Length: 151
Image 1: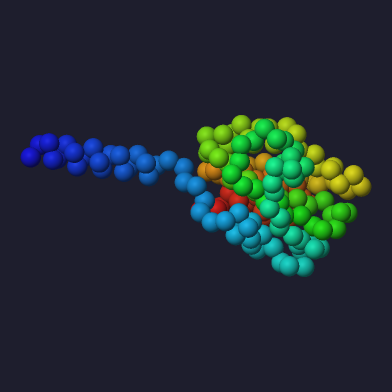
Image 2 (image 1 turned 90 degrees about the horizontal axis):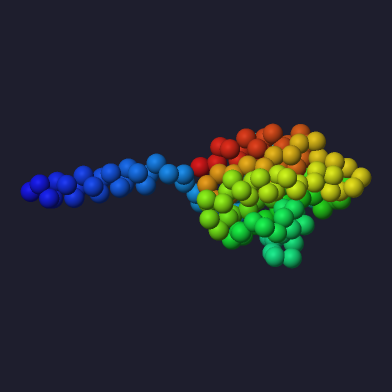
C-alpha cells in the first residue's frame, strides 16, 4: 500500500513540476501575428500591410542575423517602402535559446533599414519558444503589450 502511495505522490509532483514551466504559445505564426495587431484600428495600421513567411534566404534580411536556430518565421511589413514598420515573429527550435536569440537580434537590428525613414521604437522580446522583433512608430507599444499578454 505504501508503494502505491509513494508512486501516486511521485506522479503528482511530476505533474506539478511540469505545469510550472513556461508554456509555448499555440497556433500558427500568422494567427499569432493577427493577435499582435488586436486593438489597433484598421485606419491606424500601416498601408498595404502584408504577412509573409520567411525562409533561409530572407530570414537574415528581416531578423538581422543568421545565427538563430528557428523552426519558422514570418514578417509583417507595409508594402510601401516609406513606412517604417516591421514585425518579425520567430518560432525557435528550442525555447532555451530565446535569451541568446533576443540578444543577437537586438544587437544587430537596424531601425533605419528603410534608408529614408526610421522606426521610432524597437523591441525584441521572447515568450516560450517565440521571439518577436518590433520596429515601428505609434503601434509598437500596443504590439509589444499584445505579445506580452499572449497565452
